[in-house]
Length: 192
Image 1 (cartoon, rainbow, N blue to C red):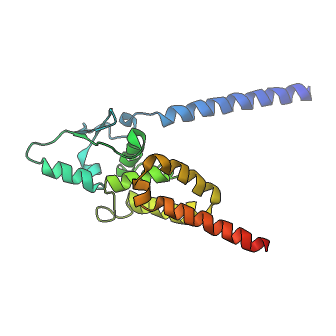
Image 2 (cartoon, helix red, strand yellow; image 1 turned 90 degrees about the vertical axis):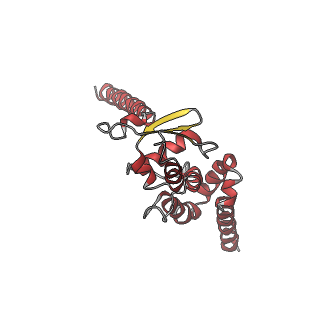
């Protein structure tokens, strides 16, 4: 009976784990209509690599210098659609930047920090426009978390390949290579 009971518990655990995976996959694909203000109609559509995001000007212009400038330049025509060409990281990364503008939390990781640094530069999401903006948050993560881990540095370097030359201009590549070199030097020094 104990063996049968353990088998049932294991099956139940695997079933729950499977549903957890499915719900995580579903939540990562949620459309922006699920996380923006539903009771306020969209007043701007941002197009990125063929993907359209129906958003609101205020949260975007309060954090992004580029979008603020575009909206200001078209104030007379009351611009309602903007296409962002060559946005680093594409629509997936823009969605994270937009969520940041709306104050929606998401995790900065070694898998997305390079894209977020590049998109924050492209969108001009700096301290000049808002305190604790995306640029400073991602810079802090890169310097204080990623550059302390050999494995994370390698992962960020791989992510940076598709973001060149901007990843190089923002010193993402150099900081990771320097951190790897330091780790190797410390390891070699400890071996002697």
